[in-house]
Amino acid sequence: MMINNYVCYAILTIFSIFRAEEHLPNTLRQVLIYNALKLSIPQFGHVSLILAPDRSKLSKRHGATSVGQFKEMGFLPEAMVNYLALLGWNDGSEDEIFSKEEIVKKFTIDRITKSAAIFDQAKLRWMNGQHLRTLPADQLYEIYGDRWFKAGILCVSMGPFVNEAAELLKNGIDVVSDADAALIEILSYPIQSTLQSTETKEIVLDNLKEVVDVLVAAHGNGDLISALDAGHEGWQNWIRSIGKLLKRKGKRLFMPVRVLLTGKMHGPDIGSAVLLIHKAQKSGAVNLRAGLIPISGRIEMLKEVDWDQIYGKFSQSSNSVETVPTLLH
Image 1 (cartoon, one colour):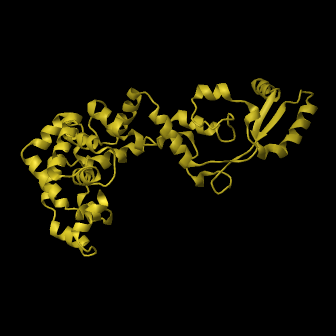
Image 2 (image 1 turned 90 degrees about the vertical axis):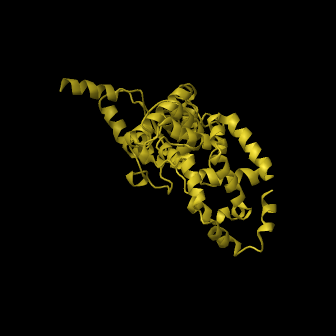
């Protein structure tokens, strides 16, 4: 009981109290208690609530509410502190990314805003991505490598492949948990669905089959694999050589190669992506269940494509194949 009394006395003699505005009605009764105990009345400060996007009181139905849940979702402590500090406060500038040390240095009570703050998880994700990309490289590699290893995507948690994968994918990852899908996306090869998509129509009708034939031949004679073994310089020399052979450049060259080697219309730099796919197989770092389709497997799948069916699907709605290439210059 003696300890409890001391604790209560310490609480009651706090000089300043800051709390949510919903405690305003309590203030008068608490002042009366201070007066009755003949204690100095502290300064009371009431700050606006943090509301959900629909401007209702933030609750569990709006998503994760505990620090542990946000950690499990892949949010960094630095990003959480940064975002929460900006809910109802700013330093008077348009800056949004702060370290914990900068927040401590800049924070002043007079910059607390009176209006209620809206908890925007999309903004939190963006801010988390900014903090992720400012981490030292070694720390970033460790975070992603550990994540991929525990998820069963990789059979190693560190090494050259982990480092290169993290560097390639980091700009597209806002939350650590997104790293799993980002790596699996690179390793996968949904060529059939991509070729059937209307998004690829112009690429297909721009005589895509001739690019396929060159890729198949380059793989067959070893030129493609030799280029990939030589790294970025080897890739660049090889892509220039097939550009001259096909008399293609720019989008007319790179988009067909992207589709045929990655199986996708969009993604990271095409050369870096293909090199990573090649290294995924050579390094032995990727678990079989991760769905990796190696370069050789991709070429074999291209050989099996029914090109008459693919061309037939798109040419039905086109006047002629010859009019399409002009759209891609």
